Image (cartoon, rainbow, N blue to C red; front, side, top):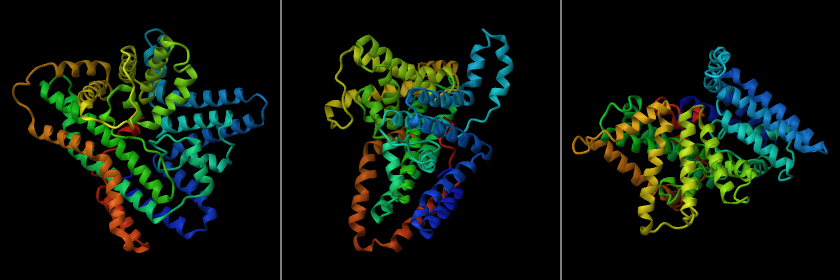
Length: 467
């Protein structure tokens, strides 16, 4: 079920009704049932795989807690989870890649390609691994099986994140959701903002200018490729950040807090800052569970640069089984490595922007846009054709005015996004004042659900659902 669908509106209304009507002590069971039902309504046959993976990993966690040698159990948990992920996501790609060297691999390709990629497997696999590692190192106590299942399957973040950490969500699940008027108001606002990002900006305004140039790269003139490149940069941002805002909003209405996943990434001044602003929960996962265990920056400059490249290459592969995704991750790795070799000072994303930063922001934005090309194209060959299309000329005539105007509008909204997301709700809270109460809360909930119903079928599947 897409968040912007009639089916989800009905589903969410039933869940909220059950939470309000039933005793609070049953909240966890209601959310587990709702989350498993939410997943089963995508492809019912995939639910046993998810439950089997959860049961197997929880058994390993329990054995790890009781064992005097917990390392072996966390290793088995990681291998088990990554093996399932690799089979479903990378099996066909690996077989096709090995076919020239191992002719018998050809026979496995059709069977592996026929496997249905489980929704959200990349996201919940990382959550399972991080939970096992954190319990192994004593950062978290071992939860009950019900809490463990709910942590991984909590339906607002199940399919496409944010990628949760145990210390963020498990205590909330233990204490139960805190549904307050302020949190409900903020949740409805986040949901509405995310819904508009997805349906209006990403699907309605930007998608039509992305598809032609990326479907037939190299055929159109340079300006069409340039507009498509800019359009896709904003399309994927508004699509994915819109999903994250909607997920956070739904969780807020339920009484839970999910972490921010995006903070105006196209205002970054350097590659490191970009990854502090883009898909933040994935970036910190890669840092804490891959880059740091590899040695981070503790083993000399050469090892640090190698660790950066390995992390970004695997981060690219996480997004998809294809050499174009590896190229995308590798290019970002080269940016990070090059920036360190130049000895530039890394900025924290909280450091205020100044007008003097504008050249750096523009350079970084265009580098990111150029690197998005292999991410969006269907293959490495198509990426090369698209780059050639950018250099094909035609820039002295035939500029598409409407697409450029829409791109400029999206850039302006990106600049104003924090104010729209954070300051307007505060103003609304002041204006609401004494009006806010159960009746007004119900009216807002009905309005948000109406928007979801009216937009049902107006858009397309979220881009990150394919990962």
